[in-house]
Length: 130
Image 1 (tube, one colour):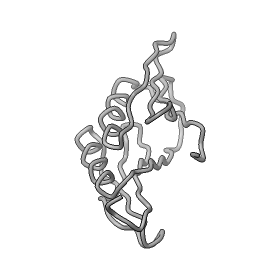
Image 2: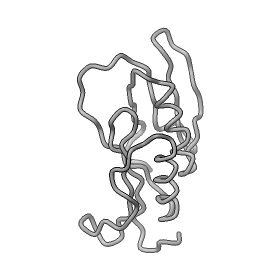
Image 3: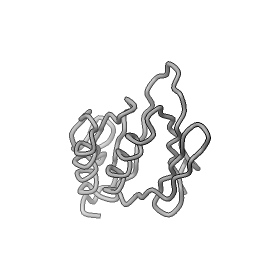
Image 4: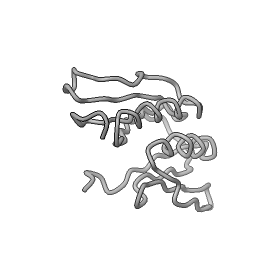
């Protein structure tokens, strides 16, 4: 069971951010499950089996970026995530690789999304071919 039931990100540019996550999360087997128009914009829901990430249109106030870490199912999936995120307009914030300062099997890549958030894909298994 996941630690979180769901996470929501708010943006003042729903179209750009939604396209970024459509392209980037597909590399992890995550799909957009729905998009609904609302009076002040829209909301998109993403997940593998169920919706766990919501992206909502909302006017932004001054805010600090957040950190999102998505579970990858292999090191290869982390690599694909990083390439997909760069192709979708993300900025590199840490190329795919082991992060032994976290632990010996922590394989991750980091991207800055169009909202300025630090987004990570991580695989933490001792077997890199899982």
